[in-house]
Length: 201
View (cartoon, rainbow, N blue to C red):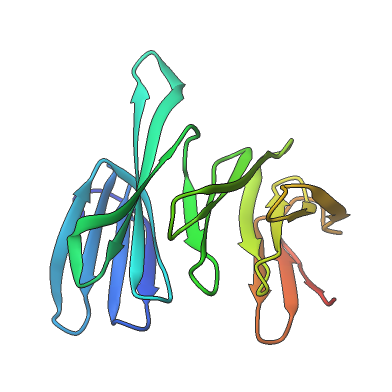
């Protein structure tokens, strides 16, 4: 189990499992139904569940002399056979956050200034793009056509998934921004810092 400060928890509602990530690069897979620890993944920096019964774990090793030169790879696992990776995806960029889109087809990865979209079934790189400001959150629209990026200085940028092309840029009226969320069912986006702004299409 995690022995250091936990940085993230994600729950898989379809299988009654959850993942905990800690600051010492340890990811734990837990079963709520069996109330026990299923497995531990060492040297892992991020993890995410898919709605299709899969989960992804990102591993990273950096040059001791330069934290900017890192080797990153992502393993896709099936819950029932989590010991074995179905797909291994090598990346040339660091990964700090990772999430599947709502149908499990794409894996959305990001660090402080970059967004990477990969095909979760084949490991193929779909697109990547650099953000000028520090990223606070990245989401994908329900139709999987656009990526929306929120930055700490209050910018909201929308990119096309396939090409990585910037479509439009908006500003959170409160200036700085700490959260960006999509409500897929109601087609509403919320951005927030000290205030909350709702965006409608």
